[in-house]
Image (tube, rainbow, N blue to C red; front, side, top):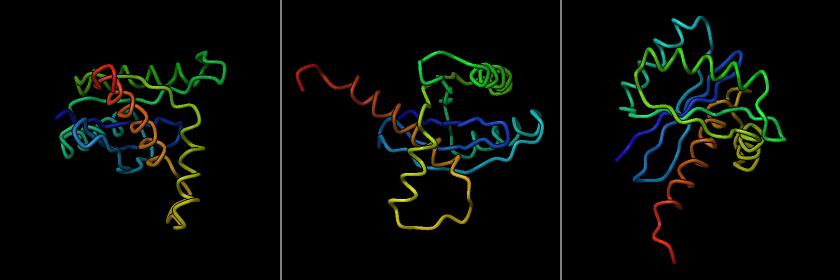
Amino acid sequence: MLTWLALDIGDRRVGLATGNDQAWLARPHSILTRRSKREDFAAIARIVEEVGAERLLVGLPYNMDGSEGPQAKRVRNYTTKLQRQLALPVTFWDERLSSFEADQIIIHSGKRRRSKHNDDIAAATILQSYLDHLRLQARPSGE
């Protein structure tokens, strides 16, 4: 079983979600309010340890045309520095529309959120998309 920690990295917050390749299910973990890279990386390292994460999945904010803009470059830069601290393998995954999907999940759940932020749910939608991709790749052809 391989445990993943997914990150939805924004300018003010980082949404975190966990999942593995046995249950194929992602779940929101927490929202980290960004302070400094040193503080952020220490907090993320604690979460990695807590959940036993072996890999990181980072949502990459592509433009709608599939190109990478300034925000994607900021995410790559942040992730490169984070990876040096954690020494975990990193996979980038398309996060386009993840915040929209997170909003839809909240609306359709019928529950009111305690917070107006959905970064953890967005991270879970990114990870779920990736886990679904892995599961489809793992199926023998013809299924």
